[in-house]
Image 1 (cartoon, rainbow, N blue to C red):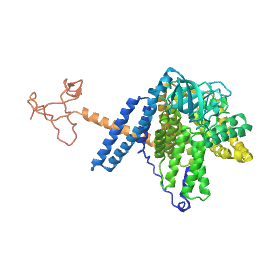
Image 2 (cartoon, rainbow, N blue to C red):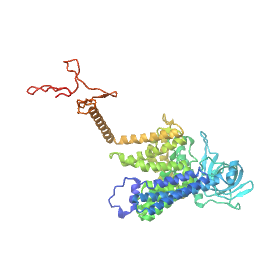
Image 3 (cartoon, rainbow, N blue to C red):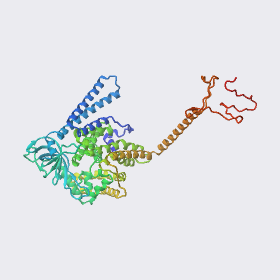
Image 4 (cartoon, one colour):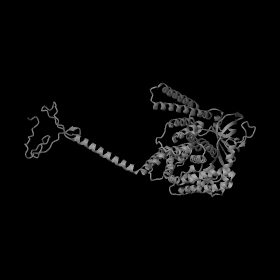
Length: 619
């Protein structure tokens, strides 16, 4: 409903009176193959050696050239086949680009001085550029302030055994106090020991920092300051957490996480409860928050009577500021890029498709950062969006007309996302959340007020603190409802059931998702189920009747005059085949002691001349 209102606002007043066209129900899957090829090439880049990746890139390019040559020389190729071959060739070129990008990181992981230093666990002094927000490393069952933090960084200069190495390599830094205050874009100096990454990871090495981060420039001569917008975003997050300190314990920690992505004040018990019932996507900012913020910005821009293109530019600017505020998380980047493509398409007067936007976002992000291809967060974000686009719309269409559209959407969105994300979640956490769908269904109406009111309070924290406090109080009330739902569902019996691990758990969860989807279809379409059952019954009856007719025709005796060298009289009786032997059917007259052969004489009727049955060969 919000998306439809946004499209109406964005079309402008000159087009609002036009009759609404019925949307096409076909799903455009033309960009699915390029997205899969690019993603697969990026995943291969994290596992294969540079030599194998070079061979892979060459092979992809050769096949692409052959396909393009086939299209250029094939004048008699049909238009549909020509389009498919061209799309496949472009997809192979993009896949080769992704593999080539991954080959750079692969060469640093397998060869060179950094790979040797990581393999031998040497101590280094490094100057790093922070590329991501700090993530707390908490131990299970341990509450309180985290003592260890994990930060993504990129090297500027590394000193190993007195040798200075200037290269751009991806590092993951694990350190203690002081690493929670670093800001993306900041240059820091630290010391520690290197160790190799886990197989399938994109980073070159893992640095266990033994010192707190110190400010330094790339040349080591001055202080390296973070970009101004990153510093402002960090200060706003800290002020927001302080402004929400008057709330009770649960909303005090949950509200900043749902609005700004800061989960430093989140209670460990609430975090465990949300993991139990499958609501961890609500403990931090996700793609749904981006969609809500983008829709609200578009509605506000069009309410001010702004033209279509300026309204789209204003909405995209606000979305960019929101991404800077919450940090470049995988789901945020995917949702932001997908929303940007959709807004650009709408502003240009061309309506696109959700699956096409998703494929474009996936290809763009993977080409920019191949490391996202192996990120479980990115995978879950893409699967959730894919489920909403492909399955959610169908579930809403199946819903009877008597059910309101908003109620159908409230059920279809969490169910479709869970059906596709479930098989991946069991790989990370082998358990089945019994009340996950119910808990997400109850908390779904509370997410929008928390996101919109809470986000509106972020800039007001610095400008109008009293108004920000009022908005935080209202948003905190709704976030308390989300927390209460999680704790209540987690306290129910059987809230978390054990599930098989590994491939067995993945396959069984896939089967459960398929059965659930079929069950939903059966529940919302009882008439179709009845017609299907009756149709199957009628078909079964017809098949049985046909089989019975064939059996009767096969067992019916035949009396055709056949010529046989063994039957000089000219008659050869053919009876029922039984056990591979030919038996002559006979009947008993009750007169004599022998059974004469068939056919049986017809009964005599009054007024008719009696027929005499002639013996075989008689005249």
